[in-house]
Image 1 (tube, helix red, strand yellow):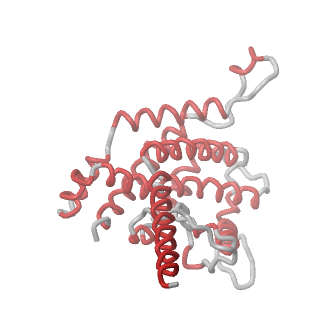
Image 2 (cartoon, rainbow, N blue to C red):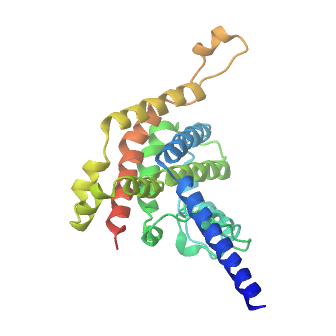
Image 3 (tube, one colour):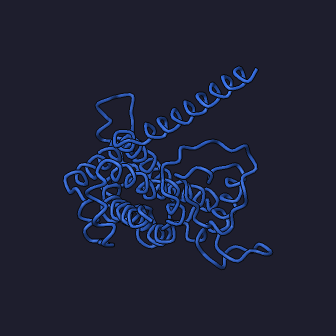
Amino acid sequence: MMMRIGFQFLILVLIISTTVRDRMATADNAYTLDTVREALVRQEDTIVFGLIERAKFPFNSQTYDQKYLEIPGFCGSLIEFVVKDTEIVQAKAGRYENPEENAFFPENLLSSLVPSYPFTKILHPGAASININKSIWKIYFQDLLPLFVSSGDDGNYAQTAASDLSLLQAISKRVHYGKFVAEVKFRESPQDYEPLIHAKDKEGLMKLLTFKSVEEMVKKRVEKKATLFGQGISLNSSDDNNGKQKFDPSVASKLYEKWVIPLTKEVQVEYLLQRLD
């Protein structure tokens, strides 16, 4: 009897250890340099389509006017109202349980109401404290929008706010994906990063993370995607090249050059500085 219980216990231990090992292997395989690069390339598509969608509408300044909206109990612009309320609903639906997602107004979020999903956990616990969406928000409205949307007002304020939110979330996800990039790079070459981390050498880490040739390739690729995705399509293939662009493709390249790439590296550095804590 005792031997049978001991044997069953041994089997249970083997099953548990195998399950843990398999989950660890799955976690390691989920984020590699190749899978991370692939995810970043796919996120380019989302951002370019987001630019195209936002360019459908003129600036529509009422969307951002603090005095336009009159809702009891709420003080702010329509874009703030849409983003805050949408994030609350999406939080209840579990969006921010995924470590790849970062809210613009995390202080307003409520707990998820849906069954939890076992997302792969490879990030250092300090990753949760890294959120630079305030910087993204400021850059988006002050610097990016004026680059590619036309002046004017067509009254589609809710639709404008919705397209803003989609693009903001896409840019935010791409920038904060730097946490995963940094983790994978650290695991690949810990000996290169550890001395700089111990020394709190931000400049050294930034140099180690910077590959100008790769950055140039990314900028060229997103501009080419913007050109292809944003062109008018005709059944007569000879007319395709004569179609009007939905927005200036160079804006996609500028977005990456001036903000997406630098902010992503900023996230990487902040993550790595906490990696050994």
